[in-house]
Image (cartoon, rainbow, N blue to C red; front, side, top):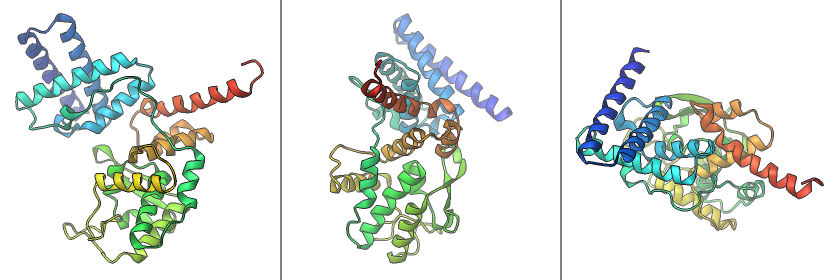
Length: 304
C-alpha cells in the first residue's frame, strides 16, 4: 500500500511539473487543462495495470488505454485529443530527462473513424486449422503460433517469453508472464498443445544460447522469435488461407475474447483469461458482441 501511495505521489508531482511547463510555453488555458487531465487519466490507468514507473510505460499501454476509452463510448475527437495530450506529456518527460526515451512519441495519432478491434469470424478461425499446409519444421511452428495465440488469448509479448517449462502438456495449462511481471495460468486447448508438441519434436535447437531458458518458439537458427517476426508469420498464414486483410497478433487475442463471449462465457472469466487488471478493459469486447446481436436482431426480428 505504501509503495502504491509513493507511486501515486510521484505521478502527481510529475503532472504538477508538466502543468507549469505548459504555462511557461504560454499554451492556452483550455489546452493546459485538457492536456493535464488526459495525461492524468492515462497515468491512473497504467497504475491500475501494475506499472511501477514512467520508464515502463510504452506504446502498447497507450493502445490498450485507447481501447478502454473507446469501449466507454469516448468520441473519436476526444480520443485524438487524448493522444495529443499524452504525447505532449511524454515529450516533456524526455526533454526534462525524467526518462531517457519512449515509444509513445512515435505512436500514430488515430485519424478518421476508428472501428472496434478486427476479429476473425468463426469460419476464418476454423480455416486456419483445417488448412494443414506443409509438414516442414517451420510450417509446423507457424501453425503452433497461430493455435497458441487463438487458443490462449495471450499477448504476443507473453508468447515471445514462453518457455517449454511453462507448458504442462498433460493438463494443457500454460503459465503466462504478463504486464507488471504478473503471472497467470490459462488453459491452451487440445489443438494448441498438440501443434506445439509436433513442432518441438521436429525442431533441432534445444535452447536459446543467450539464456538458460528453453524457448518454445524459435527461428531456424534456434533463436527466440521477436514480435515483428511473429507478426509476419501471422500475415503470411492469413494470406495462405485467403484472408486478405492485414491482421496483427493482437487480433488473435481480440478473436479469442470475442468468440468466448459470443458463446456465452462470463465476462469475469474472460477478464481472468486475458489477464486484465480492470473489468473495464475487458468490456470493450462486449461492444463487439453487442454489434453482432443488434445486426442479428435487425435481420431476423419481425419488429426490428
